[in-house]
Length: 202
Image (cartoon, rainbow, N blue to C red):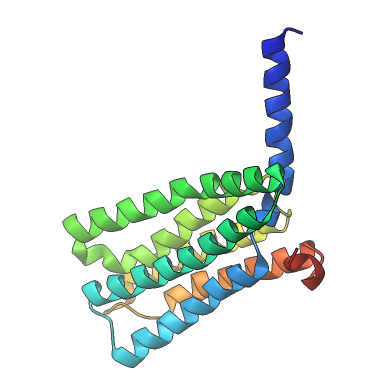
């Protein structure tokens, strides 16, 4: 084995260790907060009657941005406070695996809003399906039970798409049903598979 092959082998081992450590990049507390935000967003939508496509998108883009800030800040703090290279690599790996679905969701939202605004009611279902693909892409190194969360998002997205044509306005229920319940399900999986409260704050 020459030096190049040895370096490649070490790099592969490092990436594999980062995958094993990857689920620690996600925390139950921050994930649960994002699930709670979906219910808060639905309550705001109902209270203020935000069923216009523009208002609907503005509300849920804000909710998504706040959720990303919460998760991103928590990840950044863990990397900053840790001396472990594996923690850094696992955090980068976890973020990198999710980026494609987030970018796809953003571009799809922009395209439908710009060229087919009448299809806005399909977005919650499409968002859920794209998010499920992100979960499946990240499942290596995550608890096996995370597959159930991915399946939940997929089925929920399909259900929302099937129900969308019968909805005269942009209803509030799809987002808490998909992202609210889905994120709380992921938070529960992370909490119990990480050993509960003791490891949640490592």
